[in-house]
Length: 302
Image (cartoon, rainbow, N blue to C red; front, side, top):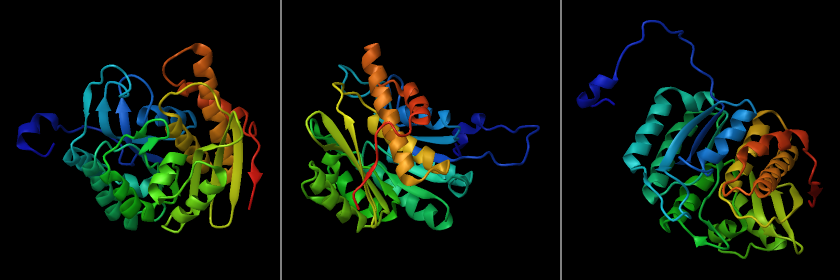
């Protein structure tokens, strides 16, 4: 935009107030035309909670890659760096309460984001960084460039206040078994030693027909179980993070926010199954999270 060839895009405004617009969350994730993953899954629940979101895309795709065709592209790293720089120039990191990162699409984008975090976090004492380390899942294996795992481990984890891996990602980040509950707790404690204050380990194996979600800090371990539903759609982890961050910014206690987030994600999956749709019903998540905070009982283990 500062290129002379783009001067036609620059214009003045005759009248405007001087006050900066509020922003609660900066969300740096993938973006889709059709379907729900990344920002396209996370932003609707956040806005339904009344929060203001600044969306920074790392990819612009027609749909998630599991369809027969996918159009669009991963953003070049210099584009992402410029978008992040523009967010800084408007003062967003100093006003937001949280910055969330998800799918980067390339190692170069992960590095560009890490460079930006290195710069803005010392200048933004109230900004909490929440890392969703998107790597893959048990039934897919890894679906990101291998170098991204080093970016997560070496550059982003030390900055993170919260990290939300699924069981597969937890194992990849720690090199430890993580699919079973006791193993996931042990692996989460290894992640805590690298910087975060909380780990949410989700999609952990429980009893037959159940999934376990764990919230682990240095002093606490919480556990929730929920029924495993026969549906595999994109965006569930993105909605989980969004609801959790949203309720935390609204002042909920950590375990209450996690319980609401699990309730919302489960309700969205139920609505998806009931409608027979191929994409997650993200609009069902927030009403359920608001109305049924204790649908799944929290159990404190430590």
